[in-house]
Length: 97
Image (cartoon, rainbow, N blue to C red; front, side, top):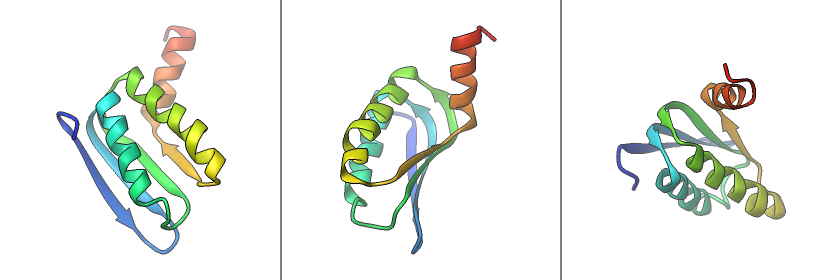
């Protein structure tokens, strides 16, 4: 597992939620992707909750989004990201705020 990264999984009959905490980098993204594979036959959708991430590395988001767009959309698996920090990061990159 990635250094200073923790992943908590909660499951009910309607969805699987991955709650991410700590530093989210490329290693953390790979850990999340491994866990998605474990739950790929479980409830739909899978929600990746990044609100507890205190250090969001752009490479982590790139790895995660590329895999979701490439792999899971083709399989018909619904995977969603929940994160206000990612929206802030994109806004800063686009507008310099």
